[in-house]
Image (cartoon, rainbow, N blue to C red):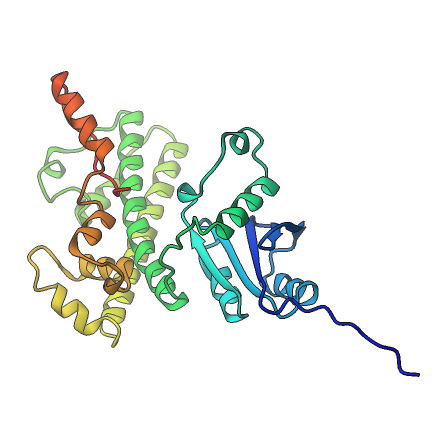
Length: 301
């Protein structure tokens, strides 16, 4: 006789998954509409999680969430492609009980995410596609190299002061610092020992390498600006006073899709042009004390 098989089906049911993402492992909590189904740790692999869900809760409607962080959005893309309704949230927007703050752990964090997702307390942030993120990384890398170049120049000046070597007056004039003539002078500076000369030479070579990288990045961004994705938007944004190619490319890569903002006030808040209530209070407080208001304005909450 053929044996009878009873297959479990979760058709019509919603499964909520909270994922606390780490480099080497994920802490996962799985909830139904009424109870905790499972808590476990797994390898950082979206396909492995999907396989577990399909095997344990077949035909269910899967909803998952994880916090934005070092891992970016590739997990979101993979989970979404597998058919899981996933969102990425700002860690500061996740409701947290005082008891959860006291006994914070990976399991507690994943349970908190799953519970808040089930209660509809979470709102996903905007998630750019991988192509946009890669273009953004190129532009951000150029900014990082520019900052590294400034730091390296300061290191060389500090080295000169440390060795008691004064910079000639002709190189202290505006636009004379870090010219070809100034770098040539640096390479001819006399030190008391070969060790001092070697230390300075290494610093100079590092600066020259950073300059080479910055030139390479500038050429790469000019090529990127001529692509179909950026050509027309960049032409339009450069009609705004103060916007050049570099600023325009940075703006477009960070905003990605300007239609995601409902109004101009939202856009201004995102880029930090609208101070939050705490900053306004701080400015008023400093004014009362007759102190300088040098607190920088950051992204509005």
